[in-house]
Image 1 (cartoon, rainbow, N blue to C red):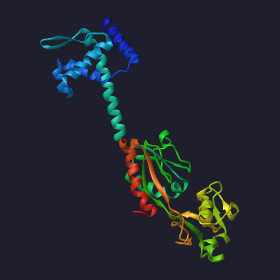
Image 2: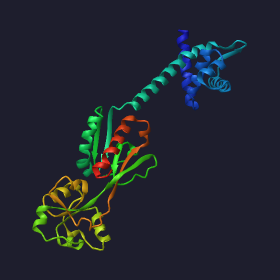
Image 3: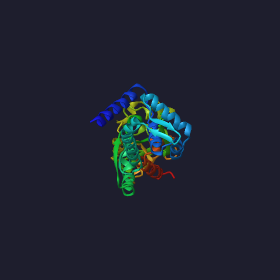
Image 4: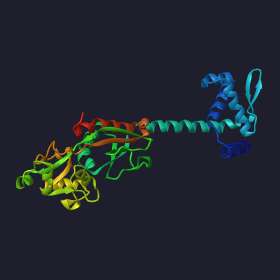
Length: 316
């Protein structure tokens, strides 16, 4: 009964000390090493540190707890009754720390579990599925959560583990790698081109049915940069849904501005003014949190995407 009361008092003292001041858990390791070895020299050899360091650790513990842990004798350090009582709680703390370390190491070293990827709608719908199918064969123990959105997800808030984006993230705690460029051009279905007048120069586009954005002004700005004061009314169809734009082009509705990798999937969709319309390519970035350095699961998916995406874009 007295033994249990002593342990309860010690645990309360440890908790109270931790609340009052920052507690260095490495002191427990030093205490147990001295207790087991019976001397500062033996403990120093075991922990690969110096005797003065261990002496300071023991003195700090005695000061924090207000107890005497060891009696200094000519034969070494002899633990007091209080130290022997503390040993049980200290070993429980050490076991918990070791279990925590093993669990953390196992979690970070395993290549099983879920990885959340976010990408723009065209990339998620058209570019990623064949790549993810191959990745499933290479990494069968990893499940993927794919977020298809044109909004830039916040990796810092863990809304995703990996992001495929056309904009480089600015946060310093993220790792970003440029993996290629997305070529963009004017395209139309062969049925549309067959029934309309030829297109030989950029100004001819203004006489045709155009497919463009609604709220996003990027295509308008592109025309304006070429010296063409185009307004929203020039577009027969306006939508910010890139997949809807693509399907409208495939249906023969008019001329749209499509990613080259998307147009390559339909042989009946042909380039318009190839080489004559200077549409700048869009950089593609692979962004991930710095946790990639210690998380093998995320690292495996990141490396796979970094290798697979450039060829899919037509790069090397």
